[in-house]
Length: 353
Image (cartoon, rainbow, N blue to C red):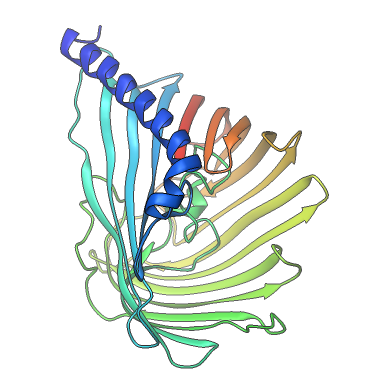
């Protein structure tokens, strides 16, 4: 059973959350004139913008621990000073457990601080940008648009997070054709360790060297197909060469998206179940109305440490009362192999503020 203190903390959180929701709705209508604020866009102060997102998740797996979690509370600060100086910072509190219950009933609420991004963009030309600092790697689409209100599901497919370095600390060059006639290109290089490295409690692999590239071919305004390459070495000396594909395509009320990766791994003496790793997911969503949508995805993932391949199906429904707010309810079912994401029911409430 949950402790009395934890239940009181949960009730207090709901009161705060309800107050934030009311204030957000009022602010969205009135504060823009006074403070130049808009829900989903943030607050503009001179050349700087302050924004972020929150994501509250309820995890109810069939087996194992249940939890009510502040999965992310993230702050963005971006500045547009000129061609030379355009800083961006993203910092977040993640995995803050309001209620975390195991077989005997345990409560905890520590959370972890993560510096997601910390870089500066210098515009070399109208199409070419030099980026220096800590950035998200462009392996697929999900990792770059990872904010909970912007991605499809509460449960993140393993292929979008587990088998590559999500970050690079170093230098990157980005090319974006202003007329969208040519593909977008990004190359990046991390020569040493990750700046403000995430603890091992919240990441599967910690990397020392990372380099790669991504090329994205536009199909229509929001539709594209992309290709990724990443070479990396983790703290155990394991070398990995990853090749990836991602796509996003809309057909009237349908949206199709997905990612696929294949990695060749040199274990360097580390015990692994296999010397390759691959994963793929394909998702479809259907807009019932402007506010309601249905979605589903299938994923197959062959982890380097598992002898079997995990196969999962997910079905869900999303309700978006405001463009910047979304509630999701979904069910995931393992259908074969050692699970990566557990079978169970999951729900989330996320706000882009």
